[in-house]
Length: 485
Image (cartoon, rainbow, N blue to C red; front, side, top):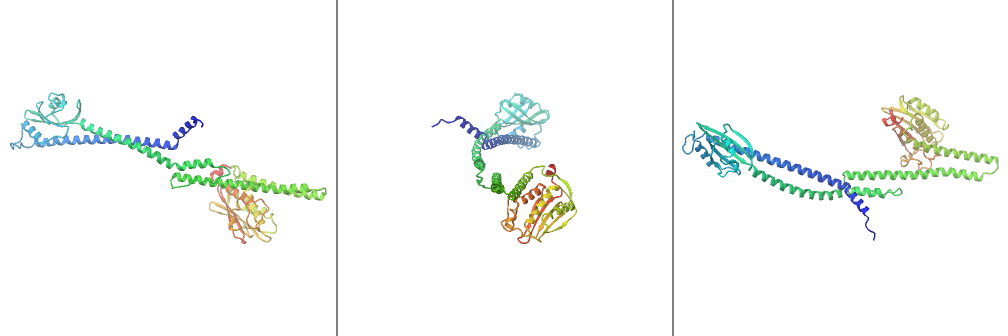
């Protein structure tokens, strides 16, 4: 048994630490911690603000009740209190019960006359600095003082009758209730810590479940080989991960189609090249010394070599169609363009009935040579699939921002099963009547030229009723095409 590889273990831990799952967990915990910290601060501030408001309301209520009584009558005598402050303070303190940590203090001539409750904290006892300060007040005052017993909030209401000077003070010691708030905050913090830990564990499990399609995506990408593109990722749900899996599967479909097309292209190209090579080799091997036989062999070999040269030229043209310098754009007059194409097309076959359907006036920015080549290819295709006396017509029409150039014939037509595939390279129709001497690249070249201009090729055909191939092009090229001019 081989010893464990420390390097592999280190790499495994690095993958775990730097994985997307770990990143999601870390950000989730950070966000949750920040939210908990912020919410705790807000809760504490709200509780303290409410505590302060309650203290202020309680102090204000005591002072208001004192003033009402001071302006009223002594319930024992039925007469106004006037200068009898002792009786006023006695009646008020006997009637009112202070809240917890609240103190009602009656001061006459700078001395505490009575208080409720009687036991006062050190900062509010007789001869304390705060009591001496209260005893000298001549105007109502409210405020807060920091003392050895904690913060004391107060309201003082001086009352002067004749020459007697008194002060009613209601004071609240806030340390006890503030401590209760802090204890409540400590409990909340402890609960939130446990909640964060539990949420982190749950987030780790949920993240792993959510990222399962990504792991499948990675495994599928690693298992793909050029010879096997059949694996697909199972898609579940409709979220972003499912959309990614669907997009990846669609990419694999395109790659599989591209590889399949490439293999077919290579097979067909090798077949198209192998046939003339076999013919040439066979005739050269059998060629004798007879001058006439030599002349016939040379003519045949030359014809096969010309066919191979045309085939290679077509392949090079299709390759160039994907390059940015494929087109040389210029402004073309449609009437002149169709007339030039017509004059060249009628030389392809003298036993067909050639005509121009329509040529509406207008202009287009395009490559003259490429458009002529595409239309001649369509005309050549029409001559190969029509018979003597059939009609082959050319035409053009401009409508809005599009130009339509077409070649129409009255030949045998194309079946619906073949109409989509005949534009592929080396594609041929399944009908034996529709035969071609070429390599099956002509319509592929037409489509490549149309797409290079930002257009497309359309086909309208029915068996035994002829075909119409239409090149649809924009009047003005797109900015991307113009930049490649």
